[in-house]
Amino acid sequence: MSSSFYLRKTTTTDLPILFEHQLDPEACAMAAFPSRDKEAFYSHWTKIMANESNILMTILIEGRVAGSIVSWEQAGEQEVGYWLGKEFWGRGIATEALNQFLKVVKTRPLIAHVAKHNIGSKRVLEKCGFKLAGDDKYLNIGNEEVKEFVFSLDGN
Ligand SMILES: CC(C)(COP(=O)(O)OP(=O)(O)OC[C@H]1O[C@@H](n2cnc3c(N)ncnc32)[C@H](O)[C@@H]1OP(=O)(O)O)[C@@H](O)C(=O)NCCC(=O)NCCS
Image (cartoon, rainbow, N blue to C red):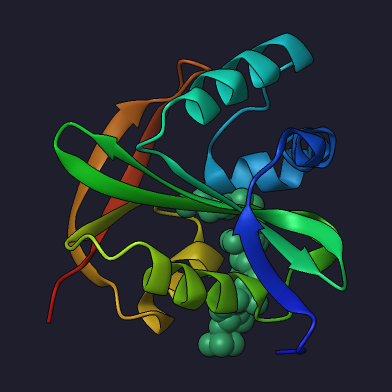
């Protein structure tokens, strides 16, 4: 991984690029998560940025916003999720971002939900030490049922 890799707290100036990333149909299909329109996207990010218990970080590559990696509490569990712009895929960036993020977010277990067909994201989790903990299904914001794996990174 190039030395130009950097993680920092997400700022509102990153949002236009993160908005574009989540519009990509291939990314949405991978994550089984439909795009938000501009209003829904900004409303969501305004809400999560106002909650200080959320950890929201931007992945920078050569000074450019490559994606985001976030952690939040849900139903008593600490969750992690990430999303990269397509032009940054396939270079080990998600793996590096998650490894760095795990030094910032120290809560264990740390949980990730991943659509069963999302081979790349499963692989990222496995490479960072997460273990398959079960499976589940849920209705996403597009009201589609998503079958997913639940991965967990335990404390030792
Ligand atoms: C999934 C995603 C984060 C992967 O990011 P990435 O930076 O390309 O991943 P990496 O380069 O670190 O790859 C890690 C491993 O996964 C594999 N991989 C990545 N994408 C893959 C794909 N589409 N199909 C198969 N394997 C894939 C890589 O080959 C690598 O494995 P290896 O080291 O054994 O060769 C990225 O494609 C993305 O943001 N997708 C859209 C949003 C999304 O799905 N987010 C996750 C929601 S749970």
